[in-house]
Length: 259
Image 1 (cartoon, one colour):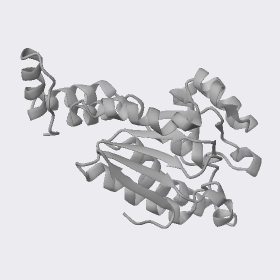
Image 2 (cartoon, helix red, strand yellow; image 1 turned 180 degrees about the horizontal axis):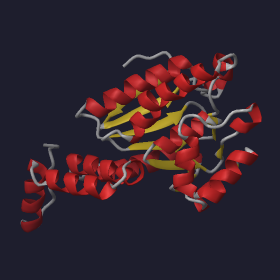
Image 3 (tube, helix red, strand yellow; image 1 turned 120 degrees about the vertical axis):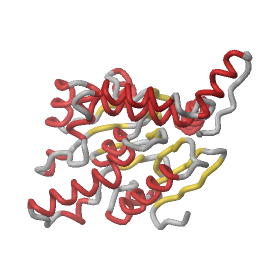
Image 4 (tube, one colour; image 1 turned 90 degrees about the vertical axis):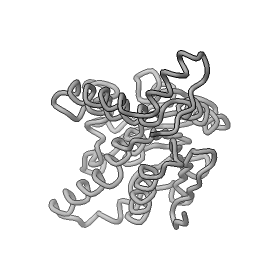
């Protein structure tokens, strides 16, 4: 897959996506968001992809925000449409993907960059990372799910503090408050993400997708238990379930095919 603002490749069933705008600290402009939308869709529908690692180019930034110049003269209606399309095509698309997305946060994750990381299912930060939502310093609020996902991850009080003060937190503090799963040296960042996905790759792909959908339903649906029950039932219809049971009885490792 050839993109202007992304580097993407699949190796051993892992899709590696690197936002490649290092000179702009990997800021999200319209073209980058469009390319992200395309590669997210590819990940979801491609059986070869079992998981995704999303990171930024260089050692300074994961994504240092959105390209403010592109929407500096927008009116209210245009602003709403910007947020709506971003939610649909990128941020919600990541969260609702059947494939696990890991954000490998290799530096600054600010504004839309932190929102992008929070849309991912798992977050790992390098020890030099700084995370924050500085939108109120521009007279805005987070518009790509930041007010919602930050609250879900760290709680109402901490979310309001971070958003209204526009303060950054260190990687260490981000781990303490539940904003990231792990903090590692930058040299170990991709390796740690690969370790997690290599474990997930051993599990039944349809069950992994069902689990992600059910967990997300706890936040997005009125009654997530209904989704869980439905997904639980569907698992019984899969070949992977039958293989998993046989492997358990035969005391061997299961060989799942995602069917």
